[in-house]
Length: 408
Image (tube, rainbow, N blue to C red; front, side, top):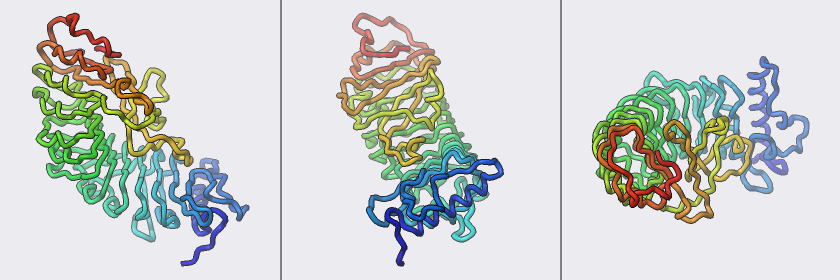
């Protein structure tokens, strides 16, 4: 189909943006505010690729809109049919709107099939009666990055996610419950974020078969078991966060097979017994991460003067600058608390592995015995928190933690 073109964006997509602007402003006018002022009706030569919150594909003539950021508008509903004017849209940011109603009178509640990144964090979307996620999720055949943190979703782990080829799943800070499926399968998954839900049972062994997996965040749930027969396959896992669950067993020695782990947080459980001596064989950050690190304002840490966080390689960074089309180095934030104070560890692209400091945190458990001598020799360990346990013995001259930045 022939499409009229301006010097920059496709004309039909420019008109689609103007329709979207009119709709959004109709929702916002009662509040006395007008948004998206750079989206101009008056100047037909205006290139919509240069409008705020819009990014186009690289083309000198007839560029298509690929990124659209509609975050922080405080809209409570959205007509999704207006998004189908952009057939090559691959990234959509609708975060922090407190939106509780998505509808589409034309296509039947379907996001554009071209979407690869969907950010719905911090809204008020709730579960459908028949499922824990809206049914349109498994229709998004191109979706790779799903961010639904901080909504009002509940129910069991959404099995329909396994029908997609996802690299990042963030359904944290909701009210999901029950056990994870034993046969959960995400072959190209890089990050799994389930923290602050109500999951129980075990972390399935099949999860560790995702060879590209870098981050598992299960904090603040009720997990009580780990099946680690395949843990050695997770050769790229750099962050494992299990704080504040219901573990009561010994710390599994199979965790030592996670040779590239940079942050290991086992705190605020009821682990008992001695600290596995094989921890000394773990690198705790010897791997060189190819990433520049930055703070993510979306996570809120930049608003707290004493709060800093460790950043690690991630697939995408959806922060406020990204919303306006800026190119940012990918980074995600992990915070960890050491004896009620926040610690920060950053990895820089140009630093060698010997300069990278990482951490382990088995504090607030029921660990007994002495600290293994070999742990003090971990040259890349930046923080070690063993506080609030039942450890005994002395720290000898040979067991000094000279390289550890924070010792608790």
